[in-house]
Length: 117
Image (cartoon, rainbow, N blue to C red; front, side, top):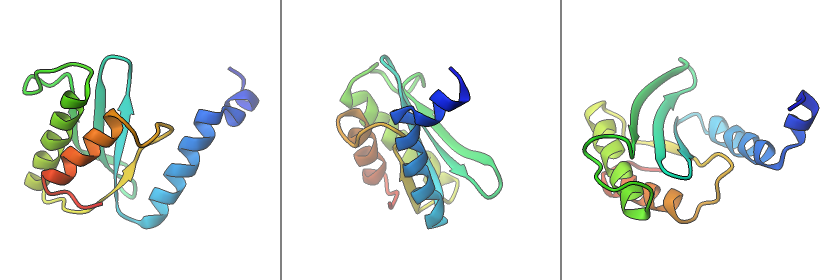
C-alpha cells in the first residue's frame, strides 16, 4: 500500500484521530487490538515509549478464545496486573475499533478490576 493510500484509509484515519485525543490527555494509554480470533491489550507510557503491562486471550489464565467472556477476562487480568504495577488511571485507546462487543467487554473488565478511565 502506498503512503498516500495509507493516509486516506478510513481505519488509519480513525485510529490516528482517537490516538491524538488520548495522547493529549497526558495519561497512560490502554491500547486495544482485536483480531478475528484473539484480543490483546497493553498499557503504554507514550512519554517514555515503553509498554508497562500486557494481557491477551493467548495467556494461559484466560480459558476462552474469541468471545466477549474472553475479552472481559483479558480486561480483568490487565486491570489486576496494572494494579500490581501501581497504575490506577489510564486513557482508553480503542484504535479504529468501535466501542462495542469485545472492545466494550474488555473495557468493562478492566473497570471492574479497578482501573479508572
